[in-house]
Image 1 (cartoon, rainbow, N blue to C red):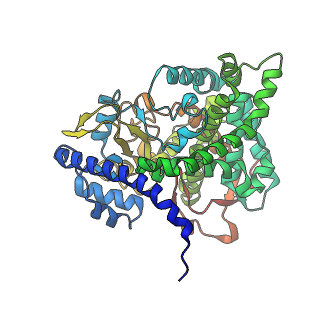
Image 2 (cartoon, rainbow, N blue to C red; image 1 turned 90 degrees about the vertical axis):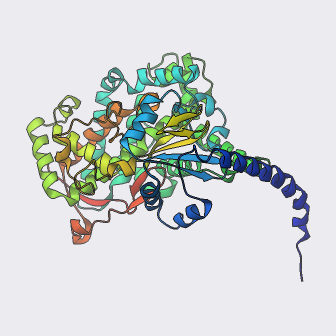
Image 3 (cartoon, rainbow, N blue to C red; image 1 turned 135 degrees about the horizontal axis):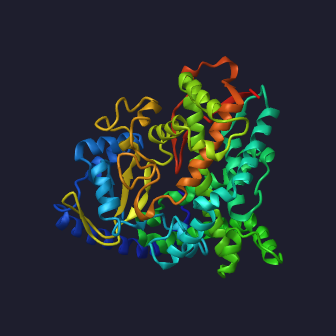
Length: 493
């Protein structure tokens, strides 16, 4: 019998790691037993294991039916509290927002050099540094003034998309790639006043594209690792995590480094976000980290929403014709941002898409800064808080026929995208950690969808029936269509 003795030398190291891990588990188990009556109810380890064989959504829906609108899961060192009702969401995001305003993101995110101190979305707490960076981003990217200032540039990027589609008339195009490239360049003009990618090349390169890189990055950064579940393993696995984080940071620098350095060398700036960050004394690494975060956040969810909306319009031709009629009555040639505000049916279509196909299954995870009582249960400090957007959107006590695409429900509803007044519909979150890019995202989505509907007729390839369009969801950091939407454009103008 052959034995690889090389592994024997790892046994002392594994013992050193295992002993503190076991002790930590026993201590947490002891605490859990003594506080179990106060924690939100939840499954045992065996029940949780059985639920793992279901899809993630079916599993959570099943647990919510068993344990109610708030329940807890113990996964390694993490205590996860899941809220699935508007009342519970309001208690967390409004009544106790000051306690649940911490952010939970897997630890690899914070191992990327300079990411923690220059992050808007991922900052662990709402401290002074976070307020300053968020305020700067709001003033120069997300505010109404900043959005209006870039109206012409944004319109030019959308028309470049239209020209590209006209050149592809009669051919099958993968809408996701084209939409992402347009969003990426529009977002980059908001931040650094220049394009970051070439539309033609982005749509050809597949997994080597910028979209492919960001998708991989979000998957890595959005998935808890063994170190997150068992912190005692950091001594054994931390090296590999730091190596992975450093590699990501190098990719950030290769994308943004030249743009930043050219701006530093220029004698005059462009009064954009990049100028403000340089003037504030941020180093190149800080700026790379922030720009990468902003680009990913400003493109992926909007891209997914546009793809889902166009898929629903393809399946529901009556809705498409009604939307096209509204657009034609409101615009004279070019589609202007001012006219988008006066298209209630377009806005209803957007809201219904965000309800039926929320771009993320949960509001970006919160973290309890202190222990707090919710629904008469104690949520301990450092608990991870998940608000189940997907469950809220399918609650039959809130929505009539929740699985059907019915935009008209929002014509008679007072529900708004900003979720500080109502909590049955919160696609952008609520409270102080709500998505800061709501206005910019809706401007991008409505403008691009209006152009796609107004300027083009759309056909499925190979005579496929709209009834056979695959609407299966793929659950990653962002919820995309499992099969990318492929359509054939025909110009109407």
